[in-house]
Image 1 (tube, rainbow over the protein chains, first blue to last red):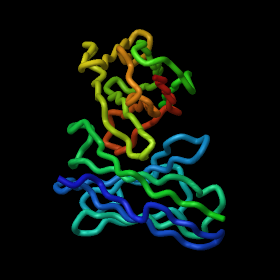
Image 2: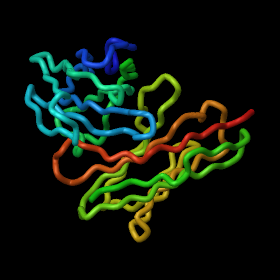
Image 3: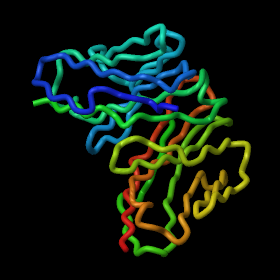
Image 4: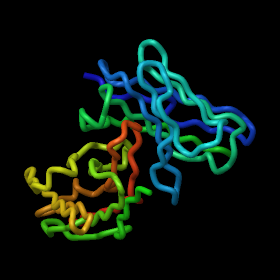
Length: 115
Length: 115
């Protein structure tokens, strides 16, 4: 069974541009989570989507946005890129409620570099 | 506020040594969930264990064991007879009782096991 897949693996952009990252969850998982892992800042919760709806977002500016498609895959968009957006963006998936199911499955991440 | 502290930034041991990774958490929730994840160089986080706050029973899984102590708000992870393949970054994480989809991660401990 395929795990969580993310694309692209690496992405290089310049300041002010937009970046789009994609995530395909494990088959049967309806929840998708996005985390940012920036150097020195650790893993920070970005967004949670479930059944096509945004359920919660972390303390990030509105230029971080995303969506979840009917097939439960998800897209993270970062507008007006800034240098500090350079990070590894990790996507995770779970059955509807990780609190009850107990586990998040992570992808290998998309490394975004902003020059 | 919720917080996870992993005071050990880096640990280096020689193969076959035992090693304990410390995790201290803060939360006001009466029900919460604690996790350990392993991040190998490939980037994806690999789930190791989840512990519910109402279950203080310690757990052993092969060479891995976890010591959960509510009295000291700690959830320490011990690897017995470490191996080179254990080299990775290990994260402790906290999830609250509310269905927020959010995990609070510690800063991680980099474990290097030398042959």
